Image 1 (cartoon, helix red, strand yellow):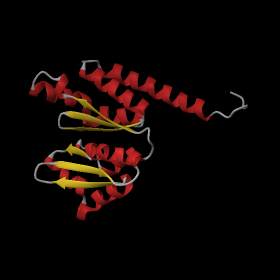
Image 2 (cartoon, one colour; image 1 turned 90 degrees about the vertical axis):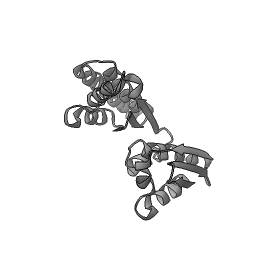
Image 3 (cartoon, one colour; image 1 turned 60 degrees about the vertical axis):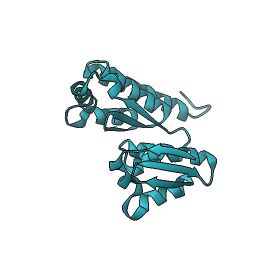
Length: 185
């Protein structure tokens, strides 16, 4: 059994309308959730496949970090899917700096966050003092690197170029992967 603490304002999202989301997570991840809505503590107990059960706490954590339940459920799509968090607070000197850093990650009208998603294929959410990422190891690594570049003060243009480069690399690797054996390259 694992315990996950999530923010008070995300408990309703985790439970869902009439407990629908909670039941879906329990069924899909083969876990039992015991949610304490007083303090935001969620006990996650594996009741079925232990490998699927390992994703249960990650799904709860992802919802707690601002992901929509359907995005968090992507973690079950394949065992390579990861959930990662970049701590914006750790890269900030004070409250005002934290606001500025979040603004840099979100970008004008959310464009930077959108580009991170579009160019990597990962889901990206900025909530509270964290940036959450759900995707394959390559996708998560690309978003994490881009976020760290922005937090270190890199110009947005340089970060966009980096993301374009990674996008093309990932696309190229995908092409290599799907090439037919014995065919012409």
